[in-house]
Length: 268
Ligand SMILES: NC(=O)C1=CN([C@@H]2O[C@H](COP(=O)(O)OP(=O)(O)OC[C@H]3O[C@@H](n4cnc5c(N)ncnc54)[C@H](OP(=O)(O)O)[C@@H]3O)[C@@H](O)[C@H]2O)C=CC1
Ligand SMILES: O=C(O)C1=N[C@H](C(=O)O)C[C@H](O)C1
Image (cartoon, rainbow, N blue to C red; front, side, top):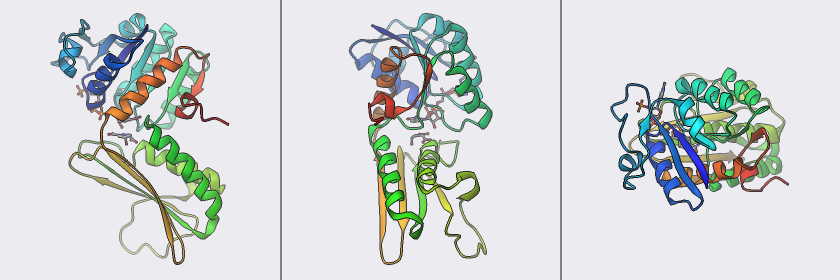
């Protein structure tokens, strides 16, 4: 039985993760952590997530969660990430990270931690997005510099980071396939007298509204034709199921930094 601790248990993804753990054979919820001072503290995690009582009380201590778990899953916000990663590292417990919007220092800390503990980090745990990344790389290599690349993403009104982590990852993949440095060629939105488009640009457009779960399109626009690779998530269950799958896979891995491609066995 894989004992899983969820960090960010009270959030939109946290509740889905509690359900996904409860539904997965061979996995059990060991701990569920919410923000210190949260009104949810002391409640049963299963009752919060709608699975029925699980006998796991919502706590506020990532270190205690790490001590009780074989693997942690973090879906919080960047402000909580440092404490959560430190707890995993101190307890030498593997961690599955879904939080997006991490800065360069935090991504560096993830790499450092991966020398000591197994870490899987994916900005999107759906199998479909993992495949879309592959398709985008293939298309970029085939189409080359003749086609302009724009990445369009849409999310719910509550999302706090832009562009999405998935859009950034798609940008990295396309830039890598085209031999470009994403930091040098990225263009985040346009306004005013922008001038003509630079051929090397990889553009990002972010839409926020309503209850959109998560949509991503990589647009390759050429002369006389265009190709669009689109993924639309219609339920957070797909992210939660993928993250729990990744966590169960991670407990059997040596220290290192992994992505969803490794989890799905797509590294060839
Ligand atoms: N990799 C993937 O497949 C996916 C990644 N995500 C990412 O997961 C993250 C969470 O998304 P979502 O569930 O929608 O967001 P929510 O805002 O619903 O949940 C975030 C949770 O983290 C808690 N939290 C925030 N700050 C702190 C802090 N400083 N200390 C402790 N707890 C804190 C919040 O507590 P409180 O409510 O009290 O503020 C909340 O429960 C985002 O970064 C999102 O982009 C989302 C979907 C899929
Ligand atoms: O915040 C979200 O909701 C999502 N965030 C992830 C991202 O930033 O890419 C993944 C998914 O699109 C939902």
